[in-house]
Length: 143
Image (cartoon, rainbow, N blue to C red; front, side, top):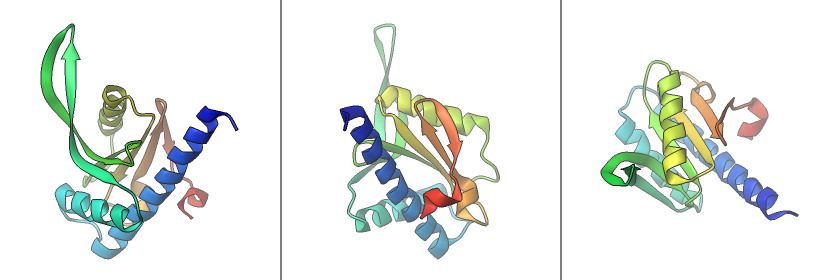
């Protein structure tokens, strides 16, 4: 197996675990809470599933040789590979997707998951960003 293919399989496996954890958090807590509550709960649930994660990871930004500081923070970085952006909004919009793309670019990560917990069914609030492509999660990916 080629190293890049194996790496992608690891990322996709991690994504499946994160999505399952998000569905469990949503099942227990439901919609209507603040993003910070979902972030803490998801970090805990991911840990229960055996994965390491870091929350509120600061991303330094540079512009033409100057440091702009830690302008951005990743909500959750799972296993140092998957960037998770958590929302609790009425609808996901293009700007939320662009925000995740920016985090992926600044962190040099390949896979991101955008989670909106303010939905009746969690599956409707999940978007994947892979190498600049946006994908809606299909039912078979949730199993």
